[in-house]
Length: 180
Image (cartoon, rainbow, N blue to C red; front, side):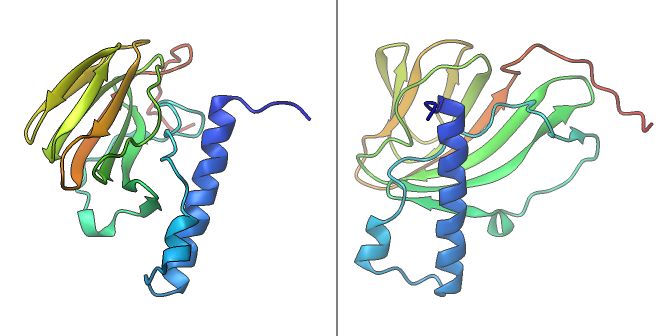
């Protein structure tokens, strides 16, 4: 059997997380201790912006927070907001995360695309290429392309933040908004 790369592991974790959400919905949202222990330990890293199949985002719209799909893990929950390619060619992915005290969404990592993280609530420690920086509500973090970065909730309450990922992990391809 071949080994799985990080992307394949993330896809598998995403599928597992979707199964957990479906199970939670069927059970009416109630979770026993054993169900909580069966949640994935870490949050899946979303597919890179500009992945195959991402739509071209040409229409303005609002995203109602209450209607965003929730994926729960043992360290918190995340909501996908949107992803796609802007008409001007930039690939983007936006998600919101609530992180429990003392937890990380996933281990520190690096990738080709860049990310902005906007802290709404809580106290976060940002691993900025090996240097720890602390940010609270209203703080903004920037993870540059190919730099090691990670987050940890070092506060006593859940932390909430939004991630805006910009750029592609693959060679840039031209975007066409014209229908064929």
